Length: 188
Image 1 (tube, rainbow, N blue to C red):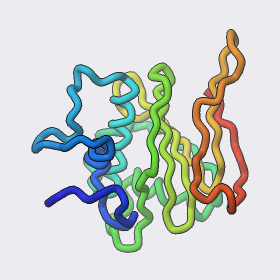
Image 2 (cartoon, helix red, strand yellow):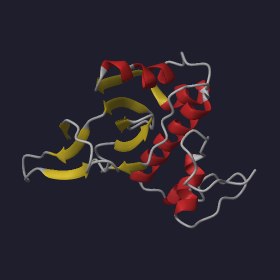
Image 3 (cartoon, rainbow, N blue to C red):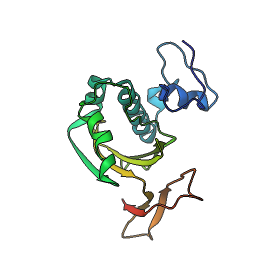
Image 4 (cartoon, helix red, strand yellow):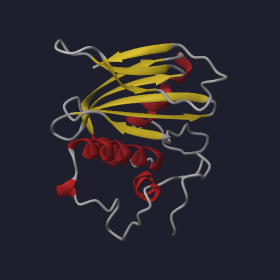
């Protein structure tokens, strides 16, 4: 089966790892999911690809793969309207068994911040809801924390005693000119 271009409808299954590679003009080979030499990967790339694998497993409802990518004591924070709180939690705890009518998390962008923080930020939208996920990848290569923001603009800032605060990531909602949302600052 051939790969679909990135412009497919969000309701269709997208192989995020291959899409990331194809977006950069590359091709994927059998057995070579992303076409990158693992020895040449930076820690930021490893963290980003780990999160992309998690979204792929979540959308495929591959519960074994999801559990292998998460720490057993995953810390989860949620900010947003309570009615959306259940979407990711059901997927992470494998209580969703059907894909009919299920909420899908297909990121529009995924950015890995400095390896020292282990933070990977993903954002997207589904059914009129804008979401941002701030994942923390631990030193052992599993995801240890999720900070989930629904219908909230997010700015990520690095704070350090020796230097001034620096914005390292900011929401890029496609509807930001017409749709105002509350804003939050996430300090690392």
